[in-house]
Length: 310
Image (tube, rainbow, N blue to C red; front, top):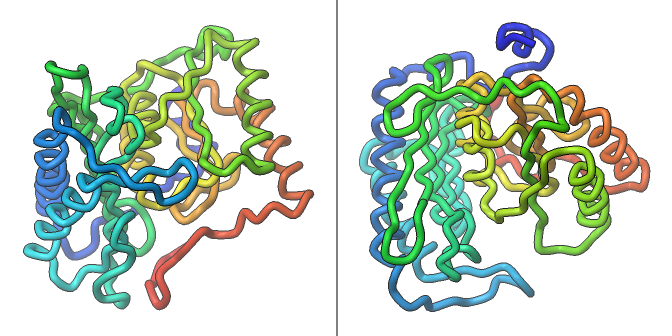
């Protein structure tokens, strides 16, 4: 299946434009903000952690907070009137703005706390509810040899890693695909359903990985090193940047029931495009079954008065 036919079959999630701000200007600030957060994380990565718990297994470190402060400083310096949704700080700014910044200052905090190399800084900006520009800074290597990969994209402008254009793999068979999924902290019906999907796809693919950093997992599909990723109950800051990067690389993004995704949705399925329909053959019915049991798949959150074209 060609990239063009992927786009015809599955609705695009990216913004139709970047509004009154030129794409080059917008992505420059997005990159600068993500780099500011990444500098904080890099400085902290080999130092002892001060770790607290949001819940039973949901970690937060001082680094999350310091990274978000650094990111917001860059955004506010350049676009003081824009709306911002940060994982740590919540909503701030003007809800009448067309622009909403979705900031994850440290995606994969548990991995960071253990020095396991699957975490990132993710910054995405929406224009009228749709991703317009994105940067994900992935930390690679490990203790004593940390480095970064920087993924960027603008709506209609393609996707890049460290400045080089990227594309997903052309693998068109699930049995030849390497897949990735994720599990939230709550062991609920969606968690159980995904565990069954994990087992199903493990038996028919080259393997299913669970690495613990949603933005990184999705960017790996865009980079062509894996073929698909899905997860229930992500938040806007988890996917606002990465879904645009995948789409601009030439991949496909939907909800897990196959419907058009917006970043306020509670499920996401991304792929290289060639295996998307085959993944949905198993994932969509499982998701519909959850809906029939009354599991809530309404929009997770949308700031009050924030105008979108959704």
